[in-house]
Length: 96
Image 1: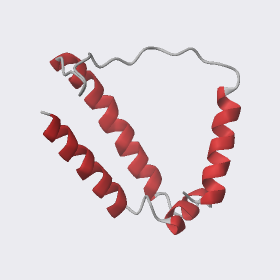
Image 2 (image 1 turned 90 degrees about the horizontal axis):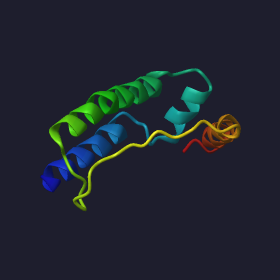
Image 3 (image 1 turned 45 degrees about the vertical axis):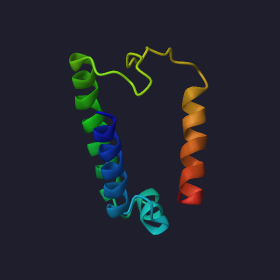
């Protein structure tokens, strides 16, 4: 079962590289509002996670270490928006 997850992760990484999500110029174009295909890639990744998470929980899949897969709710804190903004600006400036 772990080999399946490893293969899925490797495929996901390969597809991200093919989508040019690791390319500086592509990221720069996204943050300059010139090319939005990376935003589409992110949207697809969010959709896959949103569909895959309930599937993992429903099938009772366990983590590599054997423990249950959990995602506890986290409270919203006042500094999260500012931290996200700083992270996004840093990402845009570095293009990484």
